[in-house]
Length: 194
Image 1 (cartoon, rainbow, N blue to C red):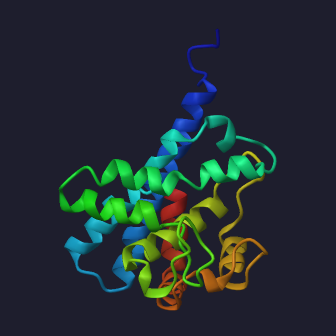
Image 2: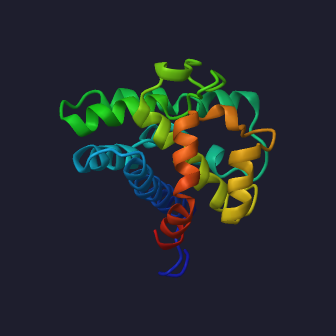
């Protein structure tokens, strides 16, 4: 049995997910403000963003903490989390959870149609999900992962603006991308303090 202050692997993973979700909510708030949304809409987007990865509760922890590449089967399972998140959140009837269901379903869809689970593109993807998507990518790039160390703000911006083979600028709504870059200093501050 570990020392009282040590977290189990499961607890450490849960804490990592909670921090990621919270930061994506805070980052989405900043970006939505930058894009001119009103206070009520900004709050809805930020609250929905916090729930974007809720479907990962059904993904085995070992997949999410794997230090190397996922197998094709493991990728297939992980790519179901938007559908599972939508299924959970669509059972609720309040406005925030309705929006959260859409964001959960669409946050891995890409402007250029290269995303999942349905390969939606352009305006087929809700604007709120387009905002959460770029914030999710930014946070994932900055955060430490089992398979790599987190990037600096500057490096993450380079990946988002120039691509790295996995991430491409064409994945993002151009208007959201432009607003993201315009408030990138604030986003960096939010990441560092969240």
